[in-house]
Image (cartoon, rainbow, N blue to C red; front, side, top):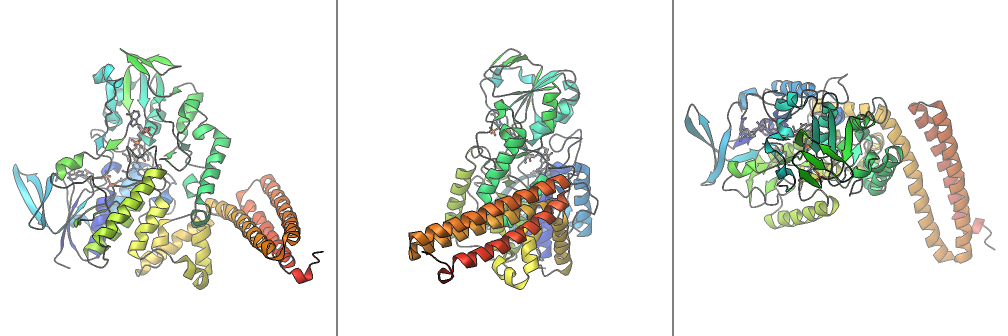
Length: 585
Ligand SMILES: Cc1cc2nc3c(=O)[nH]c(=O)nc-3n(C[C@H](O)[C@H](O)[C@H](O)COP(=O)(O)OP(=O)(O)OC[C@H]3O[C@@H](n4cnc5c(N)ncnc54)[C@H](O)[C@@H]3O)c2cc1C
Ligand SMILES: NC(=O)c1ccc[n+]([C@@H]2O[C@H](COP(=O)([O-])OP(=O)(O)OC[C@H]3O[C@@H](n4cnc5c(N)ncnc54)[C@H](OP(=O)(O)O)[C@@H]3O)[C@@H](O)[C@H]2O)c1
C-alpha cells in the first residue's frame, strides 16, 4: 500500500470502478456516497427523484454492461431490468471486498485545494468534517441536475403543471387519463412515452430537431448494438454507418420511425442514437401523436403547427446539465477542456470519471477504462503527456467531436464515438490489441477481434491476471458464436470482397498506366466479368439463404460463396497481371 490517499466522490458505476481499480494499484482510497446506497441512477427508489423508472430496462445490450472481470451470469436477459444491473453491481462490490472503503449517507458539500492537498468537506452529526486527500476523483455522474429550458413558450404554461422527467415517478398518478405533452426525443422521452401510452388519455411527443431511433433488436433476441466490428471501424466505418442508416430508413422510414415531424437533422451516427422504437407502436394504436417543436402556447392550448391540443401537463424530457459541479468545486474550473475528458492538464491530481456519453454501447463500459487509466496514473505507473501535448490533444479532440456531433454539441459536448474513444484510452493504458502483430502470432484471435462484434474484452485479452484473461476469451467466444456474430461475419466477408475488388482495380489502373491503355481496357473488361460473376454468386447465395430462412445457413452459404469468389478472383488476377501470358494485340 502506498501513502497516496485518493478521495472518490459518488458511488455509481464510475465511483465503484474507480475504487476497485485504485485499490488494485495499492492506493489508499475512500469513496463518499451521498445517498444510503451504491448504484447511482440504477437504484430504483419511488420516493427519490431521478434514476431509472419502475419498469426501466437497460437500453444498451448486456454485452456492453459487463464489468470486464466480473461478467453477468449466463442466462441474463439481453436488455436486463434495472434491478438486475443494480444487484450485479452490489455483488461486484462484495466480490472485490470494496464495502469497507465506502462511506454512505455522506453528501460532499465542497472540495477545495489547499497547500497541494484536496480537502473534502461534509456534514456529520451537525458539524462540518474535513478530510484531506492527495488525489480526487469526481464520479457524481452526468444525470444529477435536470435541465429546465428557458423557453418563451413554455413559460406561458401553468408552471405547476410543467414537470421534469427527473420527478416523473413521484407524479405518475397525476397523469392518469390526462393529455400530456412530452418534450424531447432521448431515451427518457422514449421510455416515458411508452409508459404513459398505457394509462394517460393522450400523449403529444414533441421533438424539436428530429431524432434517429434505432430499434434495440434486429430479430427476436439479437441486440442491434452488436452489429459493429473492428473491420468496419478501421476500413469502412463511414460507409457502414450510412448503410445502416439507409437500411433503417428503408425498413422503417425517415430517422428509423418514418415520422416526418421527427426527420433527423443529422446523419446516422453523427448524433446521439435513441435506442428503442417501442413508442412507435403506440402511434399506430392512436395513443401517441408525433409532433415537431412547439410554435405557441395560449393558456392550456399548445400549438405544434398542424396539430393543436388542449393539454393538462407538460413533461420535460430535456436531459441534464452539470451545474451541480459549481457548488461542489467552487475554486476549480470544472468546465474547461479535459485530457480525454478525464484530466485537467494543469492539475492532474483531480480527475473526472463518468463525464462522457457514448452514442452507442454504454457509459459503464467507458467508465471502466477511465477508472483503469486514472488508477495507473495515480499510482505513477503511467505518465501522462506534458501539459502542452495534453492541451493540443484537447483542441484536436474537441474540434473533431464538435464537427461530428454538430447537432448535439451545444448540449452534449462530451458525446463520443465509443470505438475510437475506447481505443484512445486503451492506447494510453497500453492494452489496445496490436492487430498487425496478432495477425501473424494468433490469427484466430485476430479474426475474432477483427470480424466479430466489437467488445470491451478486447482490452483485457492480454491481462496479466489469469482470471480476467480467461473471462475475456470466454466472452469473445460467446460473441463469436452469437447470432449477431455470425451475421456480422457474413457482412464482413462481403466487405472483404468489395475491398479486394477495389484494390484490384487500383492495381489494374496502375498497371494500365505502365503498360498502356489497350492493356488497361482489357484488364478492366476482365475485372468487369469477375465482378459480374461475383454479384451473381452473392445474389444466388442470398436467395438460397433467405429461402432457408435461418441465419446460420446464411453464414454457411455466404462463406462458401465467398471462398469460391476468392478462388475465381485470385485465378483471374493471376491471368490479368501476367502480360506475357496474355495476348494484348
Ligand atoms: C433513467 C436513466 C436510465 C439509464 N439507463 C442506462 C442504460 O440502459 N445503459 C447505460 O449505459 N446507461 C444508462 N444510463 C446512464 C447512467 O447514467 C450510466 O449507466 C451510469 O449509471 C453512470 O454512472 P455514474 O456513476 O457516472 O453516475 P450515477 O449513476 O449518476 O452515480 C453518481 C453517484 O454520485 C452520488 N453523488 C452525486 N453528488 C454527490 C455528492 N456531492 N456527494 C456524494 N455523492 C454524490 C449520487 O448520489 C450517485 O449515487 C441511464 C441514466 C438514466 C438517468
Ligand atoms: N432505458 C434506458 O436505458 C434509459 C432511459 C432513460 C435515459 N437513459 C439515459 O439517460 C441519459 C439521459 O437521457 P435523456 O433522454 O433524459 O436526455 P437526452 O438524451 O439528453 O435528451 C434530451 C432531449 O431533450 C431535447 N431538448 C433539450 N433541450 C430542449 C429544449 N430547450 N427544447 C426542446 N427540446 C429540448 C433534446 O433535443 P435536441 O437533440 O434537439 O437537443 C433531446 O431530444 C442518456 O444517457 C440515456 O441514455 C437511458
